[in-house]
Structures are given as C-alpha cells and as structure tokens.
Amino acid sequence: MRLTTPPRPLDVEALFPELAAHRRTTTRLHPRAGSPGVRDSHVGGPLLWPADEPWPVCEAPHGRGPSAAGPRPLLAVAQLYGRDVPDLPAGPDGGDLLQVFWCPFDAHGPTGAGMYVHLRWRRAAEVREVLTEQPAPGAVGFDGYVPSPCVLHPEQVAEYPYIELLTGALGELVEEWEGAQEEAAYEADETEGDGDAFPSYQCDLSIAPGWKAGGHAAWNLTGPGTLDCRTCGSATELLLTVATREWQSDGTSWIPLEERPEDQAQSPTGVVVGNHGKLNIFACPQDPAHPHEFSVQ
Image (cartoon, rainbow, N blue to C red; front, side, top):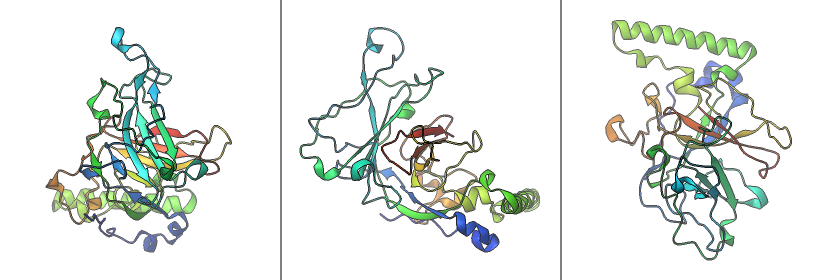
C-alpha cells in the first residue's frame, strides 16, 4: 500500500525564500495495522534478535511486592531497516538496523515517574539464528506502552524548523504572517465556518506529524530546548519521533491522499506518549555510538 502526503496548501519557500536554507527531509513512517515479521521494518512486531544475545532488561523497581522485584525484560517497540527509511542514518560500525525498546512502567529518571527508552543498532546481515520466543515484561504499568503490530509505508517529505526556532528577520516575518493567518481563520470561522482555508506555518507548512525518522523536531510542550551530546558537546539531531497520533485535529492537511479522517488511522499503533504527545529521540551527528537524548513533547 502506498500512502502519499498531499501537497502543502501553500509553497512556503515562495512565501519565505530564506527557508530553503533550513529545509530538511524526513521519512514519515506511516505505521498501519498489519502482521510484520523479523525481516520487516515495523512497530510492535518481532525483532531480528540473535538467539545467543541477552535481551535488554530494566533494573529499576516497578511498584511494590515480590512481583516488582528483579530485572524485567524491556518491551520491543519498533525496528527500522536502513534500506526502508531514507532519513535513518547509519548506526555505530555501519549498523543498518535500529531496534527500539522501552520499559512499560513510568518509574525512571530524577522524578521516579519518567520513561526509560533503550536503542540498539546492529548489522542485519550478521544475525544468523533469530530468537524465536522473544521475552515480554509480563506486566505493564500503562496500556499506552504496548504497541499494536503495524507495518510501515515510508514516505520522504520536506520539513522546515519549528516556528520558535526561526530567528532574526526571517523569524519576525513568519511570526507576523502566522498571526495574520490565525486572525483570518478566526474571522472566517465566525462568519463562514471555513477557517481551514487559512493554513498556518506551524500546523500545515513546517513539521510533519506522526511517527517519522529525521527532519525537524516539534517542541509543542516545552518550547525549544538545547540537547547537546553528553560525550562530545555537539548539537544532537533528530533521529526518530514516536507519536501518539498520525495527525492532529488542527493538522488534517497531512492526512494521506489515500485515507480519510474517518478511516480510523489516526492512532494505528495504540501507543500513547505522555499526555497524548510524542517522544523525540536525538543522536549525535559526530558519532552514532554516543548516548542518545530524549524529549517528551
């Protein structure tokens, strides 16, 4: 199945030619319900995991009682093959397969109530015998951590920076235009009920929603932050976005041409991040072996 993002309602580079220098590509993963195998890029399916390699575990305590003690297997969330995802960079030692895990309990970090995410890179060709019975945590603290099996339909599109990251004269021009669009949309809703005729930079022209690899990060919750590599100090770049929804109610222009709002494809994975937001995962562009950084938005 092919899923195609509609052309943007406006040519943003025609409006603001300076944005061309900030253009990046991202690969929208378009997860949709399916039955993936170990050789597929997917969400919520079995991993290409070597039979002789220990499965990653979480050592943190998970609640109270004997059942909460001891290491608990991490939950497999997704795997991405570089051959399928144009905007997925190579991993350490030329790794071409990214595997994503997390603990299905909010019991981590400084507050003791945060997420724990773990990434593994590998060279797929080196996996000879695949682990057939893959461990599961046995219990989960929140159903939103458990992804439904989905196959991917990757599509590469262009993106532009989060509006609050645009600085100087360009930032002022975009902010002024955005304000005018919002005012026109409000007035149209009041009089004609057609505020959608006035697309906005933030919702329609800059950052694609949903699961994606690469591109620009959205900072809807916290506002723009700085995530530098803890090892070398380099500014990290967006590696992967794990999203609750494939589009928001104010961003329906991103719905694929092959689908409709009523097709029940807005939340195909069943994953819920934070307050129905997204998890941005960042990587060091200088060395993919350096630790990843994470931000819930």
